[in-house]
Length: 196
Image 1 (cartoon, rainbow, N blue to C red):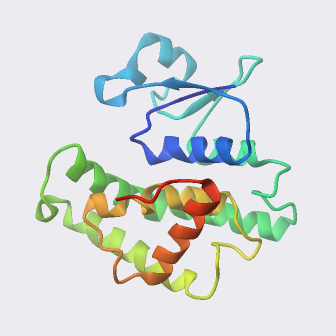
Image 2 (cartoon, rainbow, N blue to C red; image 1 turned 90 degrees about the vertical axis):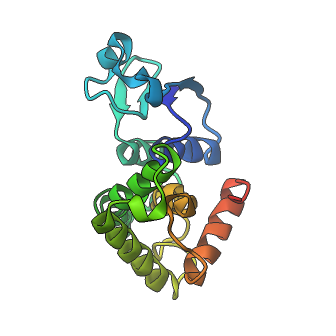
């Protein structure tokens, strides 16, 4: 399997974290999105959407969209419950992450880290929604170790990727102890160094 991605992208890191946690063999193919690496003719032939990450299987099939990829990789593993309701709760988290979390936290991070904007130059509406997502996470994690009742899963991996670096987008985790505890637990399981 080949993983095409850019390690500045949390969406790409989700795939990397999942593959590494499951000890899956892969070849990492670095695609520099900042220089148009996902817009080359060769890449667009594999993924016409021009987005990373994608995986290319040994038989040539290609799969895009980070949460679809990690769901595929986690099939028949402890990272994806087999009981239908618990599996649906994981899916619920994956959809929430892409609709109510990533567009606000990840883009705020991009604005500060890669566009050089000051915290007060971020899109205020985006910041407000990012703060709301982090508050919801803190409340949700106040009564549980991991995101779903089934234990550590791809729901945690999907939400972790951008949450653990949310401070790079100007978000303050110091008042969100349950999120910080959860990040530490997930990083330990994934053997990741803590974000400085």
